[in-house]
Length: 192
Image (cartoon, rainbow, N blue to C red; front, side, top):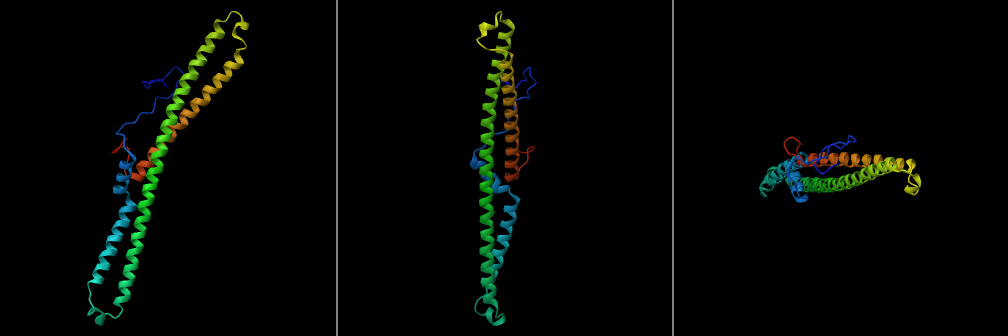
């Protein structure tokens, strides 16, 4: 693909262009932790459990006269608070891990895409040179064994390289879509 992103003579798709700001891994994780709906739900549940636990701990020893099972309720509330805190930490860790994995997957796919573009350009140039040599050669012996079969092998390699380029483009788009999902944003309001 030419550097300016135009289509070449073989109908290759336009270069995949990023539409928004570049973000660091830390920025992606921060946005994901702020926007992830499952994390917000567990955070709200933890806050409610903590409020209930604090309400029970406000009762002093006089409260046990009116409610003899108050100590048991306090223990249950404490265990519930620990459980919701652990659930919050688990989901927090999963969000960080998912954002990190998808971020690096997108980075790798971008590097693969750039490498595939370079290989496609070079192979296309070699195929063009090979075609010219075969057309302009007066004596096939001058080509030192280069023939139509070898040119066809070069064309096959070019087709494979274009396929790998397309896979890299699609892989990056999928990784970016997954990253947006983890971050709790969409492409219309948050392109990058």
